[in-house]
Image (tube, rainbow, N blue to C red):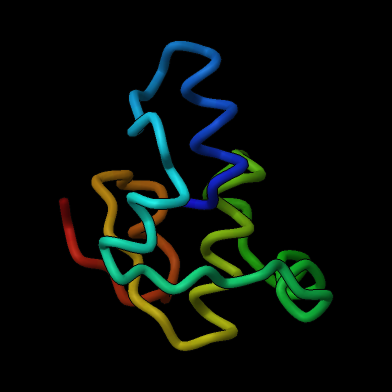
Length: 86
């Protein structure tokens, strides 16, 4: 999940996050991944299993960067991206 998605979902009441999100991310040893042109162009190659633009970007980033997604979203699991079920 990107910080912009966390902030938006928190504002909508769909998610809670720490008061100092940046510090919490640093303390958890997460490595931020900037959104690149390569990531956004890869979205066009994705099947339409998922309509959520946030999730489609995460899937594209994971595929381009050879990363694993941690999720319980069954729609994401339909893509050929490594997933750890949450």
